[in-house]
Image 1 (cartoon, rainbow, N blue to C red):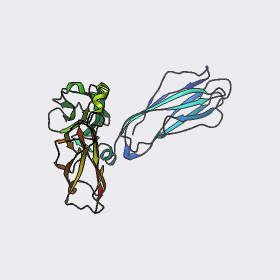
Image 2 (image 1 turned 30 degrees about the vertical axis):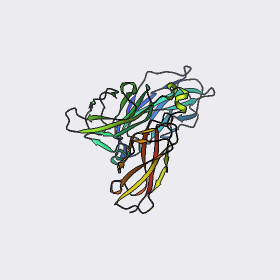
Image 3 (image 1 turned 90 degrees about the vertical axis):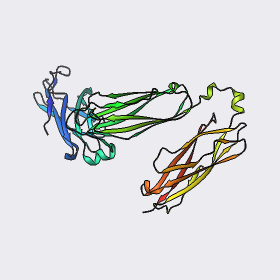
Length: 351
């Protein structure tokens, strides 16, 4: 690893202290090599001795040490700093504040560099591979957004290759605008896809999934489909009070379906009910699970006032990992106050 010391023009503090540098660039280095250490120096040009009171790094990933003895006229002192790269792939830009003399004169040391992530860290933080580009997920959930509102969503990516990447993407969704920053992602650097979702572009309320095909090289040889999911719900502030009083009211019975502690690899059927305690028919627009492993086989289209409708589904246990699980089945209805209700399918998949 080669450290690059950025020398600055002398900036004496009160005409006495000259910092030989106030920036330090570690350059690019591998996370697997562990901590990296650098230092900057200062010279006391004054007629009197001075001292460093204390140093304060900007975060816990950075440690610092300094010359504790008095700095006599003409002497040099050192401030050293250590950066811990473990679990932190990508560029960093930190500061170390140095307080000097009886007046606590402040100097800010800036340290920077780029961490080349270790394979285990990249797999944990960016598990989805798209050629040299790694993504933190393929699902970007927006949750519920009221009709007429908009929302920004973000997806982080990492360039694990040795060349800069200029990702491309394709989406047919009129309600979605996609951008990536920076436009060119340097080796070892992070990028961010931003998604701007406008519900006013959709003609009706309900769940929507917007697929975006992302390519690392722009030629389609390495592609990954990322899905932005949203449930557009009514803005109840625009609904008259008398209409709300006469509206349907959805409840799920039960809200938790426990499949037990001995779920193996076989399919397991489950069911729950949708109860309408309102004063008008409840329209069931969709019952779905965004997580892998759940299929819904039966859904009522309408539930009359005071009645129940049965939902049936199946857990494909072979598609989920071992251990405790909690899969969310969402029910979207025309209940204006609670358009989405969630039934939790829980249990433990045995080894």
